[in-house]
Length: 196
Image 1 (cartoon, rainbow, N blue to C red):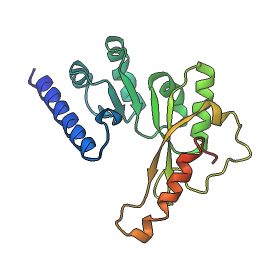
Image 2 (tube, rainbow, N blue to C red):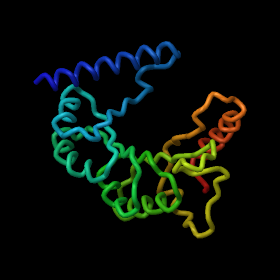
Image 3 (cartoon, rainbow, N blue to C red):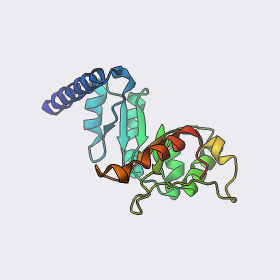
Image 4 (cartoon, rainbow, N blue to C red):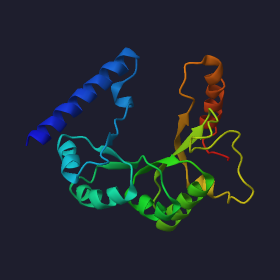
């Protein structure tokens, strides 16, 4: 029972800190979503957070989520689950069925596979596109300029809507290095669909 108490207490502390930070920035605390990362934690730990009233979770691996979440979602049908780790195209079908959002769309081939599975299943989920505005070669994300390949079906970009973007920039305080990233971020998020 101490585990459940610890999780509930920690969750309350994190939510209070988010609320203080939001108010300090003149934002409403309810504009900020806390994704509780349950990867590497068993279903009992996730259940403790669910019992404490938290409903938004992130998992890093499709297989781990598949083993843990079907039973939890039966008991907590309002729970929402995001995939926050890399996704292989051979696991897209399971991901579309299991998750409410995929936060790691990092290549056109993956977007096309997600779009196909959503069309086949009739289930639409949120998709977050990763954009590498710093053009760093080690980042697995789309890099500007983003153009749609001629082989990509146009339907991909209407069936696989992009809800948001996860924008990467270089990890530095060097202003000349990061200043080009901001206009690239604005262009990437303004287009609503991502014409790679």
